[in-house]
Picture 1 (tube, each protein chain N blue to C red):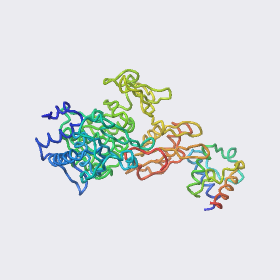
Picture 2: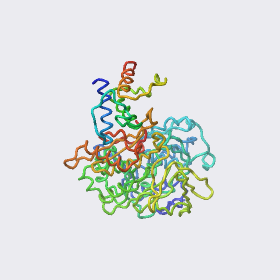
Picture 3: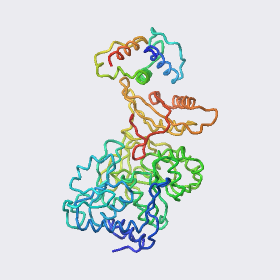
Picture 4: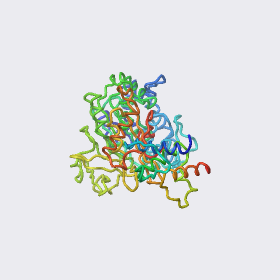
Length: 87
Length: 453
């Protein structure tokens, strides 16, 4: 499973668990505006991704530097791609 | 003075009572079974009162000869713990009971001698004080707290406070008591003291497996079942139906955790005519009160006025229950949160269990109760998962009923549980991680653990 697939799966699970429409996820989609994800949804996504990818880039000590805004699905994919490369 | 009947035991000094009871019963009915260990299994073993009395006499003689400063009971077998307690009490030797997870605390009792299942007092034990009054040493009985909230710590008790809740009246004589608690902790000690003081039969199952417990109860004619709500729930949801049907339970005394109305209803319908009480006690305070009407929580009118016995309950503005044991003792914050529901105060959880999600408080007990009310959910545990985004996140695991009624599947029980939570709870309280588990782990004290494991 690619990181992009894992991110897509996690978001779809969040939408399904919260009884929202599960739509096709595009990398360009805005997390808040297009998908309606709030901070709880994002926190759940991060837990799900920690389970599927084994990393939590938001908790690792290496990531204390200010992060660029995470606005789109592809921002999320980039962060996990970077974190998976530097375990 | 040696009491001639069990009912007269209360006239003897508290520290002498256990040894006096064992001798008295061994004298009258030497063959009577005092303790059954490994009940419900092939390695079942019974110990009678004569055997206990002989062991107590031998240990008393050794203690009298060596006079140690104190004894740390490191025995694993419950019959050894009974003997150690009885002998130390009557010989006025302080005794400490340390469960496995509190063994680190032994440093605090460096001058005391350890006593294992051999019941042999190590020779060369530090010379202690001449036999006298307990007043010359700081404690009579030392027990560790359960560590539900924070690391275990040692608490000192007198024999009077240890035996304060024991009931010696005739209606309590000769009954079968189940010991599912750890025998070295307050709750477990209370059960074996009560059973042995009243010529009863203490039945310790070989494990906490629900089928083993049910078989022990059925085979050994246990009629009194002291338990935590978690262990009772596991028994009635998971044990073999046939075994449950053969159990003849008169009384269930619940403690250690708050009880919910759902469990009380299930229990009443399964064991017709059973009397259910729940005990509110802490290792520091001992038994504070007992609710015997079979309803959850306690009557609202108990708050703010002295109860029989002088206990006074009050509530801090944030809902924490405060207890004052008597007029001349300090008010103690219990760490337990209560909330008024109708004519009752019900427990909403431990202060330290609160999960903080994005600054909002979530009470895990409330979420657990709701999950358990969903058809197909047998057990539930709610805990906080750390999150860099919201601080914590509510996580839960559920055990689905076995067998599940057709056409339900574990997956649609899970979806139904989430739907009920979404409908009934604030957004931050809805579990964001909901796993289906084979069983819910419990702590050594038989409670549901609250933090992620």
